[in-house]
Amino acid sequence: KDVSEFDTLEELKKDIAEKLAEEAKNRAQAEKERLAVDKVVEESEFELPKSFLDIRMDQMLDGFVGQLARQGISFQQYLDITGTSVEDLRNQFKDRAEKEVKTELVLEAIIKKEQIEVTEEELNKEYEQIAEQTKQTADKVRAMYEKNEEWLDSLKYSLKLNKAVQLLTKEAEFILEE
Image 1: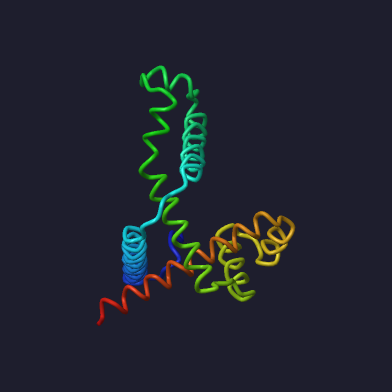
Image 2: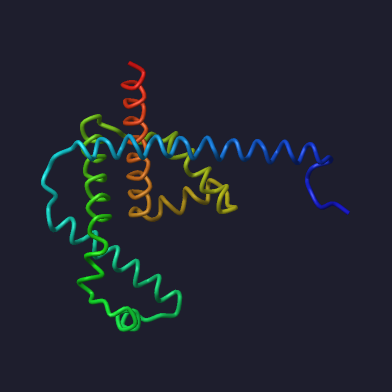
């Protein structure tokens, strides 16, 4: 009876080792990217518009309320049980919201300064990755995004942000090598 796609235990072990190595490599790259972005954000001095911060804190609060609902807990129940006010809860999100908004503004400034764009080839590659994850064809994924302009804009924006992060990471590596 087949229980595996591998013919031998050695093949299975080799596959597991390769997957673990790939995961470790990806984690290390993500950590390098996070450190590079954090450093640039930390050194960027600008006044964060209060309205931006308020919007992000509200988004985080909405996400939290949604999480509670999925767990079968009403927002009011949560507030009653924890003895927390809405304002207290919003303020718990403040530091994270501030960091996220600053990061996004810094990355947007890099996108603008470096004139970062997304090519058709990069979009197609992303469609293929999404298709693989969702067990659909790339053509079907592309058609879904092309039908919904908001989704397509969001995907392009995400790819631009990723390119800005990669650019920062390369710059950081270059500086460290000097």
